[in-house]
Image (cartoon, rainbow, N blue to C red):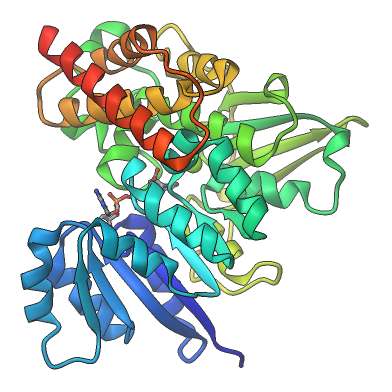
Length: 385
Ligand code: NAD
Ligand code: MG
Protein backbone atom coordinates (compact mmCIF):
# COMPACT_ATOMS: atom_id res chain seq x y z
CA UNK A 1 0.00 0.00 0.00
CA UNK A 2 1.37 3.42 -0.92
CA UNK A 3 1.24 5.88 1.94
CA UNK A 4 -0.28 9.32 1.35
CA UNK A 5 0.36 12.38 3.45
CA UNK A 6 -2.51 14.53 4.62
CA UNK A 7 -3.09 17.78 6.52
CA UNK A 8 -6.42 18.71 8.06
CA UNK A 9 -7.12 22.39 8.63
CA UNK A 10 -9.98 22.50 11.13
CA UNK A 11 -9.37 18.98 12.45
CA UNK A 12 -11.56 19.40 15.55
CA UNK A 13 -14.69 20.37 13.60
CA UNK A 14 -17.46 18.35 12.07
CA UNK A 15 -15.73 17.89 8.69
CA UNK A 16 -12.42 17.28 10.47
CA UNK A 17 -14.00 14.52 12.57
CA UNK A 18 -15.60 12.87 9.54
CA UNK A 19 -12.26 12.94 7.70
CA UNK A 20 -10.36 11.47 10.64
CA UNK A 21 -13.00 8.77 10.99
CA UNK A 22 -12.25 7.63 7.42
CA UNK A 23 -8.49 7.82 7.88
CA UNK A 24 -8.72 5.79 11.07
CA UNK A 25 -10.28 2.98 9.04
CA UNK A 26 -7.26 2.72 6.73
CA UNK A 27 -4.36 2.09 9.12
CA UNK A 28 -0.96 2.39 7.46
CA UNK A 29 -2.35 4.23 4.46
CA UNK A 30 -2.09 7.79 5.78
CA UNK A 31 0.73 9.87 7.22
CA UNK A 32 -0.66 12.91 9.02
CA UNK A 33 1.36 16.10 8.58
CA UNK A 34 -0.61 18.95 10.23
CA UNK A 35 -3.75 19.06 12.33
CA UNK A 36 -5.15 22.45 13.27
CA UNK A 37 -7.90 23.99 15.41
CA UNK A 38 -8.89 27.42 16.60
CA UNK A 39 -8.30 26.53 20.25
CA UNK A 40 -9.65 23.19 21.62
CA UNK A 41 -6.10 22.33 22.69
CA UNK A 42 -6.90 19.15 24.60
CA UNK A 43 -8.96 17.68 21.77
CA UNK A 44 -6.36 18.68 19.18
CA UNK A 45 -3.56 17.13 21.23
CA UNK A 46 -5.54 13.92 21.62
CA UNK A 47 -6.03 13.70 17.83
CA UNK A 48 -2.42 14.62 17.11
CA UNK A 49 -1.24 11.82 19.39
CA UNK A 50 -3.69 9.28 17.98
CA UNK A 51 -2.65 10.03 14.39
CA UNK A 52 1.05 10.76 15.13
CA UNK A 53 0.84 14.15 13.44
CA UNK A 54 4.05 16.04 12.68
CA UNK A 55 2.61 19.30 13.93
CA UNK A 56 -0.46 20.51 15.81
CA UNK A 57 -1.44 24.16 15.53
CA UNK A 58 -3.91 26.35 17.39
CA UNK A 59 -4.86 29.52 15.50
CA UNK A 60 -5.54 31.29 18.77
CA UNK A 61 -2.09 31.80 20.23
CA UNK A 62 -3.42 32.13 23.79
CA UNK A 63 -4.24 28.40 23.62
CA UNK A 64 -0.64 27.41 22.79
CA UNK A 65 0.58 26.87 26.37
CA UNK A 66 -2.25 24.40 26.94
CA UNK A 67 -1.42 22.62 23.67
CA UNK A 68 2.28 22.46 24.58
CA UNK A 69 1.44 20.96 27.92
CA UNK A 70 -0.94 18.42 26.38
CA UNK A 71 1.73 17.36 23.88
CA UNK A 72 4.61 17.25 26.36
CA UNK A 73 6.71 14.11 26.01
CA UNK A 74 5.51 13.45 22.45
CA UNK A 75 7.48 14.11 19.24
CA UNK A 76 4.70 16.30 17.88
CA UNK A 77 5.59 19.95 17.33
CA UNK A 78 3.13 22.42 18.87
CA UNK A 79 2.59 25.85 17.36
CA UNK A 80 0.15 28.73 17.65
CA UNK A 81 -0.98 31.91 15.91
CA UNK A 82 -1.98 32.97 12.42
CA UNK A 83 1.57 32.71 11.02
CA UNK A 84 2.06 29.20 12.42
CA UNK A 85 -1.26 28.15 10.88
CA UNK A 86 -0.14 29.32 7.44
CA UNK A 87 3.28 27.68 7.89
CA UNK A 88 1.67 24.36 8.81
CA UNK A 89 -0.66 24.57 5.79
CA UNK A 90 2.35 25.23 3.55
CA UNK A 91 4.11 22.00 4.63
CA UNK A 92 4.16 19.53 1.75
CA UNK A 93 1.20 17.14 1.86
CA UNK A 94 -0.36 15.01 -0.86
CA UNK A 95 -3.79 16.23 0.17
CA UNK A 96 -5.04 19.02 2.43
CA UNK A 97 -8.56 19.08 3.79
CA UNK A 98 -9.53 22.76 4.09
CA UNK A 99 -12.22 22.56 6.79
CA UNK A 100 -11.87 25.73 8.84
CA UNK A 101 -15.11 27.67 9.10
CA UNK A 102 -15.34 31.18 7.67
CA UNK A 103 -12.92 33.57 6.03
CA UNK A 104 -10.53 32.67 8.89
CA UNK A 105 -9.60 29.68 6.72
CA UNK A 106 -8.61 31.74 3.70
CA UNK A 107 -4.90 32.36 4.44
CA UNK A 108 -4.08 28.72 5.33
CA UNK A 109 -6.18 27.42 2.42
CA UNK A 110 -4.25 29.69 0.04
CA UNK A 111 -0.98 28.44 1.56
CA UNK A 112 -2.07 24.86 0.88
CA UNK A 113 -3.04 25.80 -2.68
CA UNK A 114 0.34 27.44 -3.25
CA UNK A 115 2.06 24.30 -2.03
CA UNK A 116 0.55 22.68 -5.11
CA UNK A 117 -0.76 19.25 -4.06
CA UNK A 118 -4.44 18.40 -3.85
CA UNK A 119 -6.74 20.61 -1.80
CA UNK A 120 -10.14 19.23 -0.83
CA UNK A 121 -12.21 22.30 -0.06
CA UNK A 122 -14.98 22.33 2.53
CA UNK A 123 -14.30 25.94 3.60
CA UNK A 124 -16.71 27.56 1.12
CA UNK A 125 -16.42 31.04 2.71
CA UNK A 126 -12.75 31.17 1.63
CA UNK A 127 -13.66 30.59 -2.02
CA UNK A 128 -16.66 32.93 -1.86
CA UNK A 129 -14.46 35.74 -0.49
CA UNK A 130 -11.36 35.24 -2.60
CA UNK A 131 -13.14 34.04 -5.76
CA UNK A 132 -10.99 34.71 -8.80
CA UNK A 133 -7.89 35.30 -6.65
CA UNK A 134 -8.13 31.72 -5.35
CA UNK A 135 -9.03 30.16 -8.71
CA UNK A 136 -6.09 31.97 -10.31
CA UNK A 137 -3.75 30.61 -7.59
CA UNK A 138 -5.07 27.09 -8.23
CA UNK A 139 -4.28 27.50 -11.93
CA UNK A 140 -0.87 29.07 -11.36
CA UNK A 141 0.32 26.40 -8.95
CA UNK A 142 -1.17 23.44 -10.81
CA UNK A 143 -3.18 22.50 -7.71
CA UNK A 144 -5.97 19.95 -7.90
CA UNK A 145 -8.99 21.49 -6.17
CA UNK A 146 -11.60 18.90 -5.15
CA UNK A 147 -14.97 19.95 -3.71
CA UNK A 148 -15.95 18.45 -0.35
CA UNK A 149 -19.26 20.30 -0.15
CA UNK A 150 -21.78 17.55 -0.94
CA UNK A 151 -23.54 19.48 -3.73
CA UNK A 152 -20.31 20.43 -5.48
CA UNK A 153 -18.89 16.99 -5.01
CA UNK A 154 -22.05 15.64 -6.65
CA UNK A 155 -21.72 18.06 -9.57
CA UNK A 156 -18.03 17.23 -9.92
CA UNK A 157 -18.95 13.54 -10.19
CA UNK A 158 -21.78 14.24 -12.66
CA UNK A 159 -19.45 16.29 -14.88
CA UNK A 160 -16.73 13.62 -15.02
CA UNK A 161 -16.00 12.56 -18.56
CA UNK A 162 -18.29 15.21 -20.06
CA UNK A 163 -17.52 18.41 -21.91
CA UNK A 164 -18.82 21.39 -19.86
CA UNK A 165 -19.78 23.02 -23.18
CA UNK A 166 -22.69 20.53 -23.37
CA UNK A 167 -24.13 21.51 -19.96
CA UNK A 168 -27.62 23.02 -20.15
CA UNK A 169 -28.01 23.59 -16.42
CA UNK A 170 -26.66 22.64 -13.00
CA UNK A 171 -29.12 22.26 -10.14
CA UNK A 172 -28.02 22.50 -6.53
CA UNK A 173 -30.35 20.75 -4.13
CA UNK A 174 -31.16 22.34 -0.77
CA UNK A 175 -32.74 20.62 2.21
CA UNK A 176 -34.46 23.92 3.02
CA UNK A 177 -33.12 23.73 6.58
CA UNK A 178 -35.01 23.38 9.85
CA UNK A 179 -37.35 26.33 9.10
CA UNK A 180 -38.35 25.19 5.62
CA UNK A 181 -42.06 25.25 6.44
CA UNK A 182 -42.11 28.12 8.95
CA UNK A 183 -44.16 31.27 8.40
CA UNK A 184 -42.55 34.73 8.32
CA UNK A 185 -43.91 35.33 11.86
CA UNK A 186 -42.40 32.10 13.18
CA UNK A 187 -39.08 32.91 11.45
CA UNK A 188 -38.94 36.28 13.20
CA UNK A 189 -38.99 34.49 16.57
CA UNK A 190 -36.61 31.62 15.69
CA UNK A 191 -33.95 30.97 18.34
CA UNK A 192 -30.29 29.92 17.92
CA UNK A 193 -31.06 26.52 19.50
CA UNK A 194 -33.78 25.91 16.92
CA UNK A 195 -31.55 27.09 14.06
CA UNK A 196 -28.68 24.75 14.84
CA UNK A 197 -30.91 21.67 14.98
CA UNK A 198 -30.71 20.59 11.34
CA UNK A 199 -33.12 17.84 10.25
CA UNK A 200 -30.71 15.90 8.01
CA UNK A 201 -27.11 16.89 8.69
CA UNK A 202 -24.99 17.14 11.83
CA UNK A 203 -22.78 20.20 11.28
CA UNK A 204 -20.96 23.10 12.96
CA UNK A 205 -23.05 26.01 14.33
CA UNK A 206 -22.24 28.56 11.61
CA UNK A 207 -23.18 26.37 8.63
CA UNK A 208 -26.28 25.21 10.52
CA UNK A 209 -27.50 28.80 10.83
CA UNK A 210 -26.57 29.33 7.16
CA UNK A 211 -28.74 26.34 6.27
CA UNK A 212 -31.63 27.82 8.23
CA UNK A 213 -31.36 31.21 6.46
CA UNK A 214 -30.53 29.58 3.09
CA UNK A 215 -27.31 31.62 2.98
CA UNK A 216 -25.60 28.25 2.83
CA UNK A 217 -27.24 27.55 -0.52
CA UNK A 218 -26.52 31.08 -1.69
CA UNK A 219 -22.84 30.75 -0.76
CA UNK A 220 -22.87 27.41 -2.57
CA UNK A 221 -24.25 29.10 -5.67
CA UNK A 222 -21.24 31.44 -5.64
CA UNK A 223 -18.96 28.48 -4.90
CA UNK A 224 -20.42 26.58 -7.89
CA UNK A 225 -20.02 29.65 -10.10
CA UNK A 226 -16.24 29.55 -9.45
CA UNK A 227 -15.78 25.78 -9.50
CA UNK A 228 -17.93 25.09 -12.58
CA UNK A 229 -17.79 28.18 -14.81
CA UNK A 230 -20.75 27.37 -17.08
CA UNK A 231 -22.38 30.76 -16.47
CA UNK A 232 -24.58 31.96 -13.62
CA UNK A 233 -27.72 31.74 -15.76
CA UNK A 234 -27.23 27.96 -15.88
CA UNK A 235 -27.11 27.53 -12.09
CA UNK A 236 -30.39 26.62 -10.36
CA UNK A 237 -31.52 25.75 -6.85
CA UNK A 238 -34.27 23.31 -5.94
CA UNK A 239 -35.49 22.44 -2.45
CA UNK A 240 -35.29 18.70 -1.80
CA UNK A 241 -36.17 18.01 1.85
CA UNK A 242 -34.82 14.42 1.97
CA UNK A 243 -31.20 15.41 1.05
CA UNK A 244 -30.71 12.23 -0.97
CA UNK A 245 -30.10 13.72 -4.42
CA UNK A 246 -27.05 15.90 -3.75
CA UNK A 247 -27.16 17.85 -7.03
CA UNK A 248 -27.72 17.38 -10.76
CA UNK A 249 -26.26 18.26 -14.14
CA UNK A 250 -28.51 18.52 -17.18
CA UNK A 251 -26.98 18.16 -20.65
CA UNK A 252 -28.11 19.60 -23.99
CA UNK A 253 -29.60 16.27 -25.10
CA UNK A 254 -32.04 16.27 -22.16
CA UNK A 255 -30.09 13.81 -20.01
CA UNK A 256 -29.86 14.77 -16.35
CA UNK A 257 -27.19 13.08 -14.24
CA UNK A 258 -27.61 13.14 -10.47
CA UNK A 259 -25.51 11.87 -7.58
CA UNK A 260 -27.39 10.23 -4.72
CA UNK A 261 -26.20 9.07 -1.34
CA UNK A 262 -26.88 9.10 2.38
CA UNK A 263 -26.79 12.51 4.16
CA UNK A 264 -23.37 11.77 5.56
CA UNK A 265 -20.36 13.96 4.73
CA UNK A 266 -18.10 10.92 4.85
CA UNK A 267 -19.36 10.06 1.35
CA UNK A 268 -18.13 13.24 -0.42
CA UNK A 269 -15.02 13.32 1.78
CA UNK A 270 -14.21 9.73 0.78
CA UNK A 271 -14.72 10.67 -2.84
CA UNK A 272 -12.03 13.37 -2.42
CA UNK A 273 -9.66 11.17 -0.39
CA UNK A 274 -9.71 8.35 -2.93
CA UNK A 275 -10.14 10.42 -6.11
CA UNK A 276 -9.93 9.35 -8.92
CA UNK A 277 -10.37 5.90 -7.35
CA UNK A 278 -12.99 4.89 -4.74
CA UNK A 279 -12.77 3.73 -1.15
CA UNK A 280 -15.10 2.08 1.36
CA UNK A 281 -17.15 4.11 3.83
CA UNK A 282 -19.05 2.77 6.85
CA UNK A 283 -22.26 4.48 5.66
CA UNK A 284 -25.40 2.42 5.22
CA UNK A 285 -26.25 1.76 1.57
CA UNK A 286 -29.03 3.88 0.16
CA UNK A 287 -32.39 2.11 0.53
CA UNK A 288 -34.72 3.87 -1.90
CA UNK A 289 -37.66 1.59 -1.22
CA UNK A 290 -37.43 2.40 2.49
CA UNK A 291 -37.23 6.12 1.67
CA UNK A 292 -40.36 5.79 -0.42
CA UNK A 293 -40.38 9.18 -2.02
CA UNK A 294 -38.11 12.00 -2.99
CA UNK A 295 -39.75 15.41 -3.33
CA UNK A 296 -38.71 18.71 -4.89
CA UNK A 297 -40.02 22.26 -4.81
CA UNK A 298 -38.99 25.76 -5.81
CA UNK A 299 -37.19 27.87 -3.18
CA UNK A 300 -39.23 30.67 -1.55
CA UNK A 301 -37.18 33.86 -1.78
CA UNK A 302 -39.82 35.88 0.05
CA UNK A 303 -39.27 34.06 3.33
CA UNK A 304 -35.62 33.29 2.53
CA UNK A 305 -34.05 36.24 0.67
CA UNK A 306 -30.49 34.88 1.06
CA UNK A 307 -30.31 33.08 -2.28
CA UNK A 308 -31.47 36.23 -4.08
CA UNK A 309 -28.77 38.30 -2.32
CA UNK A 310 -26.09 35.74 -3.15
CA UNK A 311 -27.12 35.61 -6.80
CA UNK A 312 -26.94 39.43 -6.89
CA UNK A 313 -23.46 39.33 -5.35
CA UNK A 314 -22.34 36.72 -7.87
CA UNK A 315 -23.73 38.81 -10.73
CA UNK A 316 -22.03 41.94 -9.44
CA UNK A 317 -18.78 39.96 -9.01
CA UNK A 318 -15.64 41.74 -7.81
CA UNK A 319 -15.75 42.46 -4.09
CA UNK A 320 -19.49 41.88 -3.64
CA UNK A 321 -19.29 38.20 -2.57
CA UNK A 322 -16.54 39.01 -0.02
CA UNK A 323 -18.67 41.83 1.42
CA UNK A 324 -21.71 39.54 1.56
CA UNK A 325 -19.75 36.78 3.25
CA UNK A 326 -18.17 39.07 5.84
CA UNK A 327 -21.53 40.66 6.69
CA UNK A 328 -23.12 37.23 6.99
CA UNK A 329 -20.36 36.02 9.34
CA UNK A 330 -20.88 39.05 11.58
CA UNK A 331 -24.67 38.69 11.47
CA UNK A 332 -24.60 34.95 12.23
CA UNK A 333 -22.29 35.52 15.20
CA UNK A 334 -24.63 38.26 16.45
CA UNK A 335 -27.65 35.99 16.05
CA UNK A 336 -25.92 33.13 17.88
CA UNK A 337 -25.01 35.57 20.67
CA UNK A 338 -28.66 36.57 21.00
CA UNK A 339 -28.03 40.12 19.77
CA UNK A 340 -30.27 40.13 16.70
CA UNK A 341 -33.39 38.22 15.65
CA UNK A 342 -33.16 35.56 12.95
CA UNK A 343 -34.82 37.60 10.19
CA UNK A 344 -32.34 40.43 10.69
CA UNK A 345 -29.43 38.37 9.35
CA UNK A 346 -30.45 38.84 5.71
CA UNK A 347 -31.46 42.47 6.32
CA UNK A 348 -28.00 43.22 7.74
CA UNK A 349 -26.25 41.50 4.86
CA UNK A 350 -28.23 43.47 2.30
CA UNK A 351 -27.66 46.75 4.14
CA UNK A 352 -23.89 46.12 4.29
CA UNK A 353 -23.82 45.33 0.57
CA UNK A 354 -25.66 48.57 -0.24
CA UNK A 355 -23.43 50.64 2.03
CA UNK A 356 -20.05 49.29 1.05
CA UNK A 357 -19.17 48.70 -2.62
CA UNK A 358 -15.36 48.59 -2.90
CA UNK A 359 -13.48 47.87 -6.14
CA UNK A 360 -12.67 44.26 -7.06
CA UNK A 361 -9.76 42.84 -5.05
CA UNK A 362 -6.89 41.56 -7.19
CA UNK A 363 -4.69 40.06 -4.48
CA UNK A 364 -5.11 38.13 -1.26
CA UNK A 365 -4.16 41.24 0.72
CA UNK A 366 -6.94 43.19 -0.98
CA UNK A 367 -9.46 40.42 -0.24
CA UNK A 368 -8.52 40.67 3.45
CA UNK A 369 -8.87 44.46 3.23
CA UNK A 370 -12.42 44.12 1.86
CA UNK A 371 -13.27 41.48 4.47
CA UNK A 372 -12.03 43.63 7.38
CA UNK A 373 -13.77 46.76 6.13
CA UNK A 374 -17.06 44.93 5.43
CA UNK A 375 -17.01 43.51 8.97
CA UNK A 376 -16.57 47.02 10.37
CA UNK A 377 -19.58 48.23 8.35
CA UNK A 378 -21.68 45.26 9.46
CA UNK A 379 -20.75 45.85 13.12
CA UNK A 380 -21.70 49.50 12.80
CA UNK A 381 -25.08 48.49 11.40
CA UNK A 382 -25.41 46.12 14.32
CA UNK A 383 -24.95 49.00 16.73
CA UNK A 384 -27.46 51.17 14.87
CA UNK A 385 -30.09 48.44 15.05
P1 NAD B 1 -17.06 23.35 12.75
O1 NAD B 1 -17.46 24.59 13.45
O2 NAD B 1 -17.57 22.05 13.24
O3 NAD B 1 -15.45 23.26 12.73
C1 NAD B 1 -14.65 24.33 12.33
C2 NAD B 1 -13.18 24.04 12.51
O4 NAD B 1 -12.45 25.25 12.23
C3 NAD B 1 -12.78 23.64 13.93
O5 NAD B 1 -11.67 22.76 13.88
C4 NAD B 1 -12.36 24.97 14.56
O6 NAD B 1 -11.46 24.82 15.63
C5 NAD B 1 -11.72 25.66 13.39
N1 NAD B 1 -11.80 27.12 13.49
C6 NAD B 1 -12.89 27.85 13.87
N2 NAD B 1 -12.60 29.16 13.86
C7 NAD B 1 -11.30 29.26 13.50
C8 NAD B 1 -10.41 30.37 13.33
N3 NAD B 1 -10.80 31.63 13.57
N4 NAD B 1 -9.14 30.11 12.92
C9 NAD B 1 -8.71 28.86 12.70
N5 NAD B 1 -9.51 27.76 12.86
C10 NAD B 1 -10.80 27.98 13.25
O7 NAD B 1 -17.43 23.58 11.21
P2 NAD B 1 -17.80 22.47 10.13
O8 NAD B 1 -19.25 22.19 10.16
O9 NAD B 1 -16.83 21.33 10.18
O10 NAD B 1 -17.55 23.30 8.78
C11 NAD B 1 -16.25 23.61 8.32
C12 NAD B 1 -16.35 24.18 6.91
O11 NAD B 1 -16.88 23.16 6.06
C13 NAD B 1 -17.32 25.36 6.79
O12 NAD B 1 -16.82 26.26 5.84
C14 NAD B 1 -18.59 24.74 6.30
O13 NAD B 1 -19.38 25.63 5.54
C15 NAD B 1 -18.05 23.63 5.41
N6 NAD B 1 -18.98 22.49 5.24
C16 NAD B 1 -19.39 21.79 6.32
C17 NAD B 1 -20.28 20.75 6.16
C18 NAD B 1 -20.74 19.92 7.34
O14 NAD B 1 -21.52 18.99 7.16
N7 NAD B 1 -20.31 20.21 8.54
C19 NAD B 1 -20.76 20.42 4.89
C20 NAD B 1 -20.30 21.16 3.81
C21 NAD B 1 -19.40 22.21 3.99
MG1 MG C 1 -23.44 21.76 1.00
